[in-house]
Amino acid sequence: MPTAHNSQLKLLGDYIRLQRRLANLSLRQMAELAEISNPYLSQIERGVHEPSMHVLRSIARALNLSAESILEQAGLLERDPGQVPTDAEAAIRGDPRLSEAQKQALLAVYRSYVADSLAEDGEGSSG
Image 1 (cartoon, rainbow, N blue to C red):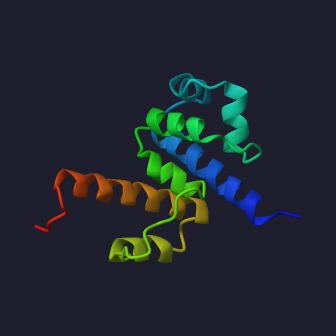
Image 2 (cartoon, helix red, strand yellow):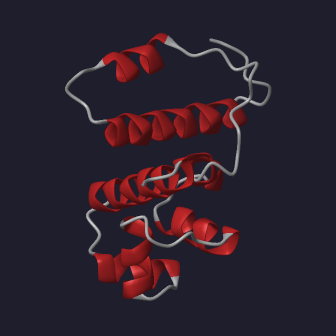
């Protein structure tokens, strides 16, 4: 019987696989960039192995993603409760053409771009 933890590992693996494919990387290329073995990356993508914090950071670096987006997908980092969802997030969540894993991947990418933009703007002034 699947547990919430197993479901979270599966979502994380799906997210990593989707990001790898979006980056046009083979499993072997991605494993090399992340400095982990092919079988280990495959196990992570299939949700059968829980990666360490170090491995998650290596994967994030290899995918040019923020470590926060990977950690959020792993359930190791909670989203700021004061952060207000945007219309873009609502549109992604409400699109019936997307699977749950695709929605989570798009939301994580969107949030990482927003975070990068806010960091570039200093205090996040609008404009």
